[in-house]
Image 1 (tube, one colour):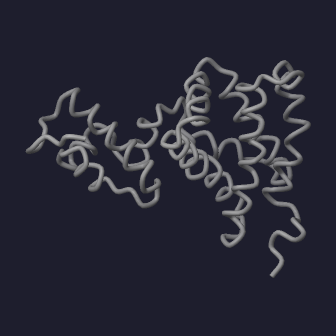
Image 2 (spheres, helix red, strand yellow; image 1 turned 180 degrees about the vertical axis):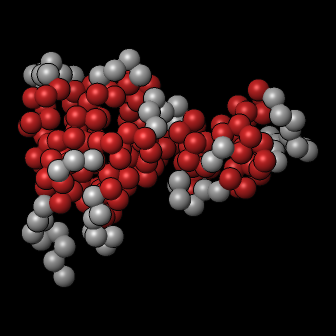
Length: 202
């Protein structure tokens, strides 16, 4: 990529350049290691412009992902309630997003992630850091177990998305959300809080 010299002024081209650079940096380094200063350097803008346009690294990441939701708002609400029903509430939340008009952006991103490693990295970072990590934190899961439990939940959520929206396997595609919640929620609950023999054994 050819870099322009000097700092860019604050305009719409600058905003787009920041988003493009953010996607590249997030995909290359991951959400946790990416910094506003590093993204600003890649976009050749002052870091203050990122704060001006997007506010925080988290908000920039959501904009870069074209996310139809803000997990910081939805996940705490979904996790509020009896701990033993958290799996069902999480499945209900993701279905409500994917089945809504706003969910088309997420489904398009999933389709792209199948064949594009760069997009797959972004999708993985979003699901793990913005959705599942928040759900685990809300439930007070043991920090040492959290990464494994998060990954196991991702197998269920990711598999559901693939089968219902990408491959369109019947009857899963046509089942009402409440029936999917009843069927898949307990499996997600087990991965969140249940015993997992052999997984955490020394």
